[in-house]
Image (cartoon, rainbow, N blue to C red):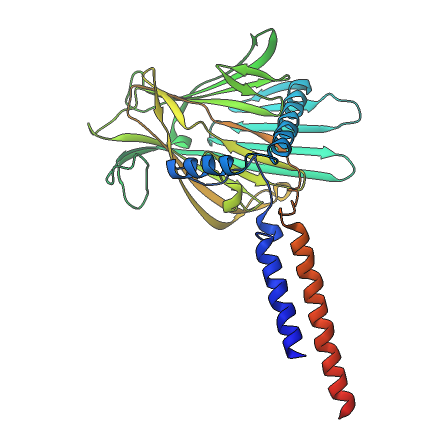
Length: 381
């Protein structure tokens, strides 16, 4: 009996090995590559794999690729077809941008609120469908930091690099807050300008420019969807004290949803709800004195408990984000905030799916045999 059980276990184990890997390691998520660095060796391996897969399997792969392309085209079509009504409200030094759905049978709203005095922005989403859902993220433009890049990695590290000086955004004077309509490719949008001045300078300023549209369009080559706002960060004539220093923008991102590693790519922070997610993403390059230069980010996450107004809830997750730029007289960078729909990650069976089924049958048989032996011995006693 023991020999039979041992043989079954061995056969079942071999069946699992032939089936590649467990189910949870075969999830496909093409839209979230995660924090993975590519290398030339990886590229060569992929080329070798593609060569090995030549022959009969090519037709199936081509069909899968065509299906994926069709899905991407459908998503692009959905973006292009979506329309929202844009409303901009200004009161004192606060601006509220509302992007309300226009489709029949839908009632949802994307809202971007910015308090210029506090340097605090809130992006939120509410919809009343079969189930109510609220998603919210706060992004605080905390400070501008002049630093010496001690380790030479181009990033600002609070523990390693030397801070020369910093300016808290909430202490900077709001020089301008204005709004206005504009047109791009026949589509009318709204623009919000918020300008701060550095103390003791004539032309030194830090400004944020919000771009929103009710229809899908491109602004300076960047796609802007009706459920998001493009933001231009402008730093002009920063008052540097050191000749070899750089500048970074320090932000604080707060959300009631936990930002896990799998939700963070190199250029995006994502707070995921049930069916929608709030995001803050940024380009990996900035225009510095008319030349594209790399943007290096550093993130530090922690748990906090912050008491807010009773109707605003409580945030428990905070991420400090530092965006470091190459030194220059004029720096332009364009992050984006907004809401995106999410779908459950499908579970894809491995190529050796039948072997995995054989493993389940074999394991079940082993369990039944063990139970039978145990019952037989118990009856003899």
